[in-house]
Length: 207
Image (spheres, rainbow, N blue to C red):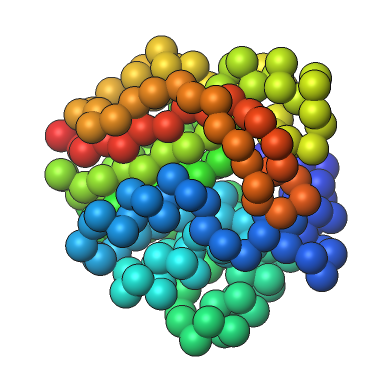
């Protein structure tokens, strides 16, 4: 990832306000509360709202992001909630975590640049144990139509960074999908996810 990408997220997270709020994503909350706590990984975790929620449920949480400003706010949020999260800053690389280290992973609006996304997903999948659970919510290809109507709903404007059902199936081939759908939802997550949008959601079990 180039420096301008990192700078963009540092700028967004440098304000006192939490860009996407401090409450967890609704779909993550719904799904995580069904699981027995264990080890969980949050890629592209931003300001920590979802990681902190998982820690409050008793999960042992690891997270990473390219933004040092995001890390600072995530650690402040964890401290305020009296929980611990292992939050690292940097790009994903081999050896960052151990194969099969995690019982669950949560991809919540983890929109990686298209040129690295398939390789990132392939590597991240190795960190999840067999029978582990992956919880996923991200904007769909159709979301561009929603941005055109309301920029406050947020999300990438690059079509290649958005998801289709077919791409999900191709990039997560080793999973049994317990749920997989494209859905119109109402977002109310801080200043940058507000309004009606189109998302892909799934819960997968690693085979």
